[in-house]
Image: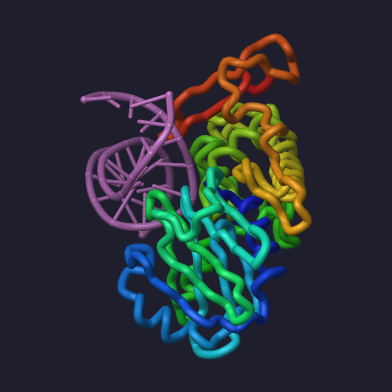
Length: 286
DNA sequence: CTTCTTGTTACTGA
DNA sequence: ATCAGTAACAAGAA
């Protein structure tokens, strides 16, 4: 479940490894993730190169040196972008990657670069996708996203304005990509915990000081998670051989039944809210 | 066998 | 028209 911090980690690593390298070959092993663009993908990418790799929310945007298209990659829940340079793994995605035998049964696309570097797009559940878009289509797509929570435009003023006329729960609010881009189920729960607010609380009842607490929690949780190189890379190793991992810092997600390590009195509850597993401490959060 | 996992969208109902 | 809630998608784990 790559969310903003995981996608950002992949973006940084791929930028470091792939930028400017000529794309020698693109193999489409299974076509579902690119629908009807199989031929176009090869036409556009072969002989091309990535000029920049950007991110909007959980969406990766690959700017190409030549042609009118931009490549988009969304990993959805189980997508991976595994990069192999001769001698090591550089970037990951979903955990449990068997890096000893790529491509594996979940590899859908394989890129080969001029220097022998390889990039594998793997996806167990095939919800993720690659898509070539024109500038107009890209603009359309990006218009639907809210502000980047770690960007300069994410101000308290912008944040407070998003509560106007909304009556939904805090959890749904945080997961809404058109309000804030990039938060998923794990960080939504962690942000609520940090802000001491119940995820099932209706946002219309939040006071100004609670909204300010939330604003600060969003930034601090995501900043720290990016710094720790995300949560989902249990066997991820970066270019320097260091393991990343926000996993030990999780306070509620995946900790149901365990004691809250803030109040020490209560146990972490797990409920189903808005169709999602939702974790919180009923003692700390209100 | 059933239930659970989640990002996004299409659909439904108010 | 607007908005909120939910089913659906997929495939594997428990």
